[in-house]
Length: 254
Image (cartoon, rainbow, N blue to C red; front, side, top):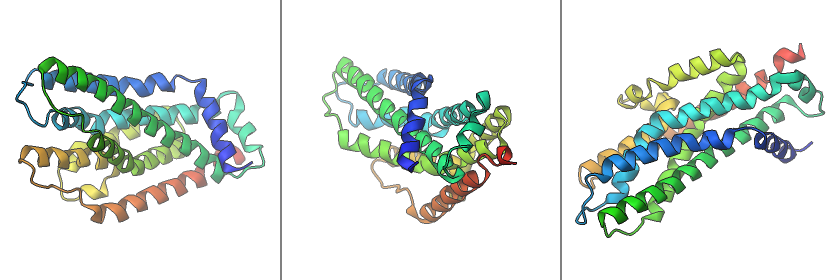
C-alpha cells in the first residue's frame, strides 16, 4: 500500500469523527472576540484596520488556541486505533510502521491547514462586517492575510511534529494531553526571551508578536529572523517525526 493510499484511508476515518466542528471552534471564538473588541475603536478615519484586527485575533490564537486544538486532534487520531484492537489490525497490513505514522501525521497537518483556512474565512467575514459597520474605507488586504496565515501554518509545523511525537511515545491520552498542555502554556514567556528559537511551542506566537511590534512602532520592520529559526525548526521537525515513526506501534509488536 502506497503512502498516498494510506493518507486517503486516514482521511476517510476523519470524516466519521467530529474534527471539523472542533477545528471551527477555536477560530470562531478568537476571531469574534478579537474583532468585536477592536471594532469599538474603529472610525471612518481609522487606517490599517485589517492588520490591527488580524493581529488582535491571531496573537492569542497562535500562542494558545491553535496549539490546544492540535493537541486534541493528535489524541483523536491516535485514539481511533486503540479501540477494538485497531492498532493490531492496522499493523497486520503489509505496510511499515514508519509509513503508517507518516500517514497519520499527514492527516494532522491537513487538519492544521484546514483550521487555518477556517480561521481566514471567519476573519474575513467578521472583519468585513466590522469595517462596514464602522464606515472604514479600506480595501481587504487579501495578499497580506494569505501570507500571514501561511506563515503561521509553517511555523506551527515543528510544534505539531513534537506534539505527535509526545502522543505516540506516551500513548496514554491523559499523559499526552497534560504534557503537551504543560509545554504550550509557557510559550508566551519563552517567546519573550532571546532563546525563543529553542522552544518550538512558541514559534507561531513569536511570529505574530513580531508583527505586533512592527505595527505598534509605526511600520519599523521587526522581521522574524530566519536564522537561527530554520535550522532549529528543521531539527525539531525531523527528529520528532523520526522518533514518532520508531515508536509507533512498538508496544503492540512485542
